[in-house]
Length: 62
Image (cartoon, rainbow, N blue to C red):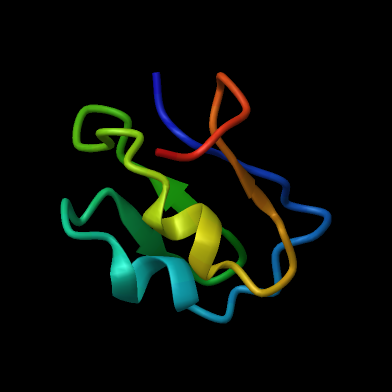
């Protein structure tokens, strides 16, 4: 599994993509793409998102 991004909340600011140590998030023109094969569900991006648009499937951060 991988993090989930709420596209209605996401501002495409790039805060999540800049902190991901696994390069699992990619800022595209109109959304943030999650490379599920790279995501380790560490929760760093969840904490970095200024609008709370990212969540873990299990609902918590490590």
